[in-house]
Image (cartoon, rainbow, N blue to C red):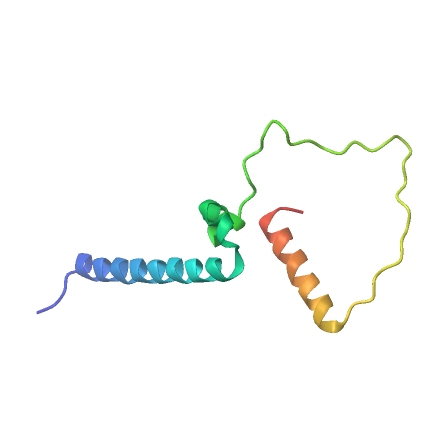
Length: 101
């Protein structure tokens, strides 16, 4: 007997739900390893989904106004090992992708 198209879609949906549940379970395990237990009641903010968006703007958010004519000083650049540079590069790319910077 041949499965109608709706049946195939239903099977795909079930597979996708299982994958999402597995990802959530993995997120919970990672959370337990990385976040101190005292912060678990706020675990929602540590999830992958939440980390990919900017928090809602609040009334206490503000810009940093620079004084007129202010020019930042040039400072020394820290020397980094190749591995450290790669981590920094990955971090910056991730922050750019999320729109944080």
